[in-house]
Structures are given as structure tokens and as C-alpha cells.
Length: 384
Ligand code: SF4
Ligand code: SF4
Image (cartoon, rainbow, N blue to C red):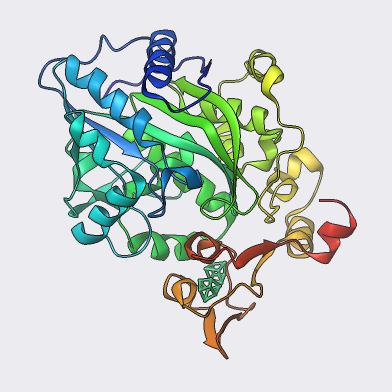
């Protein structure tokens, strides 16, 4: 798969009406280099963000009208189009079908696309990986000629935000994602893993649904917020740099952007260009997820900190998960906790802090939004 670096673009898309979406997609694709690379018979995979089986208005998943219109455009060029994701939890055809129903993705079938039900995966090697040199890769994506990453712009507990780069965590199938979290508990280690997956897949195109974004308790139970934009580009890191600028987040606050930068993959010298592009849309009051892991991930050289000092500061500032009174004791969090740190006692989730690795999967799986990332007392006192 060819991989072309390019400046991301930002196109107004005020709503999800079919005509609005079509116009925005046409503009975005043209500005991002067009679709001339799509040839008849090519098998193109659209990697959606279907992190939870939720209705489109929850703003947790890629909007179906955007996915359907993109499908139509690819089909018009003679491509075979397959769409899917591998959310956390069991990776089964029945659960995928439920997700397609809830998220409205059946629209993509009407547009000529195929919704993936293949739950197979293959162990692959990636010798140049930093965190991930061997991993399980879902077959439906492996068998495509090109991948288009169609993400959603949202707040995220562990990584600050999720958009193009984080979207490719779905390369790893279902429950194996939890084990992978457990093996890569350090946020920078996990961030490098996300970069490895992007370097392995090398998405041909990245699109990001920023029409209705999510803020607060993201990536599944936050609050929808209107932004009215569609982001596009051929480089996931540059696209996410643009997304971070719009959300008012510093690059050093997003571990995977820091990892890409340290590896020389985040093109230097483009900061001013992207800041200027984002300026009219910056959300100064964007509500982050409560998990602030920002500052400590910077290199010791940057901050003049020794490893031990960095670790101590991390322990003081790191957020933790906690269930509030909306907890109904359903056990979803416990079932998906890679560290087995959660027990349901007296109808409520209790967390063993010594076991907890701060991956915030519990927050992602909680159906009521009761599980939240709580900032540490030091972080609150110092306004972090
Ligand atoms: S309690 Fe939550 S944050 Fe802690 S390890 Fe389990 S899923 Fe991850
Ligand atoms: S998933 Fe949410 S509601 Fe269910 S037990 Fe855990 S915290 Fe409580």
C-alpha cells in the first residue's frame, strides 16, 4: 500500500444531511489528493470507529451518512468496499450485526458496501515496530488493497483524544485488545503501539467526522458537541495534530502525537500552518476526559527531569477510574478490565487501585457513564 504524506484539510460540514455530507466529502477528497488512486476491482476497507453499539446521535461512532456517501463514491469508481471495526469485548458476527443496527451502518449496504462479519485474525510480524513487533491483525483489513481510516473526533481517557491514529487500534481483534492494554500499561508504550499499527497499515486516506464531536467523559459516554467540520488527509499524525489544535490540546498532551514526534514521523515545521488552519474553530472551553496524563510524558531532556523524578510526578498526577452513584452493578467494567482490578460488591463497582493500570477501558465500556476518570488531588490543586 502506498503512503503519501500530506497537509490535512478542514472542510465545513454543518450537518449530516445527505447533500451536505456529499458536498463536504467531495471538497475534502479533492483537497486531500482526490480518489484517482482507486481502480476498478480494488478492495477498499473503511475502518470505522464503532467503539460502542450506540445510536449516531450519541456522537460515539462515525456517522453512517458520511460512511455511506464515501461508499457510494468508491463504488462509482468500481471498487469493492468493505466496512467494519473490532470494538473491545467479544469479536463475533452477532455482536457486529448488533453494532451495525444500532449505529445506523446498514445505510452503507444500501450504498453498495459490505459490512464485515469475518472475525478471523492472523498473527503478523512487524520487525520495525517499537512497542509491537508481533500482533494479531484482523483478516478483513489485512485482505484489503487499501485502508481508509474514517474516525470520529472525541475526548479519550488514556490518550487525551481519539481521531485518526487511535482509530487503528481496531486492527487488533476484540478481547485481545484488553490483553494488549495489559502488556502495554505505560501510556507512552501504548502510544508507540498505536503508531506501530499506523505504520503497519499505512492508511491510504484518513477522514475524521468532526460534525458532532464528543467532549467530557469520552470516548463512549461523553457529551455530543456541534463542531460542523470534516477533516481529511493522508497522514494520520498531521490530521490528529489539526484535531488537537481545534480541541485546544497541546501536542505534548497526546501521548501518541508525542511518540510520533519522537520517532520523526510527525513532520516538523508544519505547526504554524496547522495552528492557523485551526484558529477560527478552536474550542477554548473543550471539556477533556478527566484523565490528564499530559505533561509527564515529555522526554526527561525536555523538562530536565531524571527518570525517577518523572515517575514520582506521574504517580502524583495520574488520574484514576472511579464509579459514581449512577453505577448499576452490571459488571461490564469488570468483564473488560485487563488487570482484573474490578469487583462488584453491594451492587457497585469497586476498584483495586494497586492492580489498576489506568487504561480506562472500564470507562469506555460502562453503559451508564458511571465510571469516570478522576483527577488526582495534586492535579486538581495545581489546575492540571
Ligand atoms: S480498573 Fe479500569 S482503568 Fe484500571 S485496569 Fe481495570 S479497566 Fe483499566
Ligand atoms: S460498567 Fe458502569 S454501571 Fe456497570 S458496574 Fe461498571 S461502573 Fe457500574
